[in-house]
Image: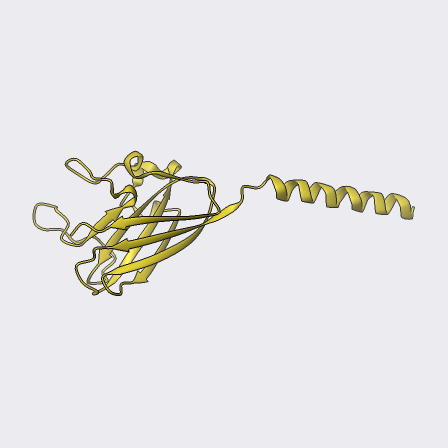
Length: 148
């Protein structure tokens, strides 16, 4: 009976190790953002998965991860633990801390914005495909320049 019990424990441990080894490893993404007009307010940094690309860059509720970080010396840094995959990052300079992108009377943002790859939009925000990158390294750093 003891042999059978230890055999079952050995099988369980083996299956647990196989399961852990088959999981996608996480990597550390470091996002450095520069070009803020001033140090007022906070930077809202959103990470979108490819599955949510239709909501990029603005739908905060659809972001995979989000963080709010202070701005110092007109720049900031945010770090995320991410599994391997395809992502895009958007950054909003929330100067008045109202949690929304403020615009002028014709809808043009009057707070700074930026996205990964410094992608630009044509008559609107940049598309996910222009801003996407692969998280396939243990440590990855991307740089974003804010457009004011």
